[in-house]
Image 1 (cartoon, one colour):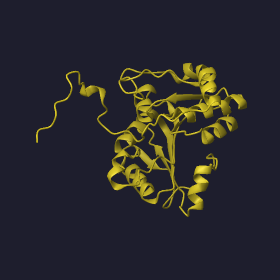
Image 2 (cartoon, one colour):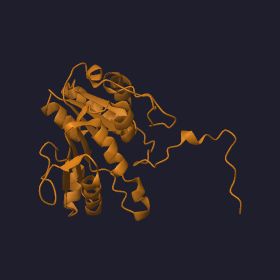
Image 3 (cartoon, helix red, strand yellow):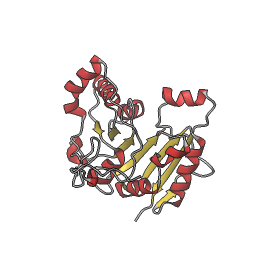
Length: 248
């Protein structure tokens, strides 16, 4: 049977060549989240130039973190910040550091804004976009001190594991963005994903292990969230990893 022809206006460049590590659902926000989105986004949300897809980043997108935050400071980027628990805790504890939370789910970003406003945080910005594209295209090379990837979607079914975020191409993207001596921190409660992460980063050019033994010690800067507690309650071991970008 012959395959149907694509529509006349089909443009293959509008579609990503690699599947993204998330499925973006249009979940409804609560009235308070809607208000926060309208009232607070102008102070917290970064204007990321768009590519063709809803969460994509334009090829020529670029920013200067010093201009973005209004100061020169250490920069920490969290990939998939969820409701913001980890990065809000860190931003409040370290006002001398700039933090960028990247998330595609608007309700999570709205919750983060609400809590940031209550805490009076001025060192936190949010980006509603696909994180690898933000790190690869929007942020300057060597501009990031730490990248956090805490509990990414494990895509547990074998047929879906090609969607996992931590793969050789992501390692290359992280290496580009990190300054020499910068750290990529990871955590997961899925053992096979933890092993995959370790294999990927052990083999990635330009990275050294930032730990001795089989796994890294738990990163003390990561606040215990309900998500992590849930994994612990189910008997899953929490695995931490840390990789340091080699100095030039």
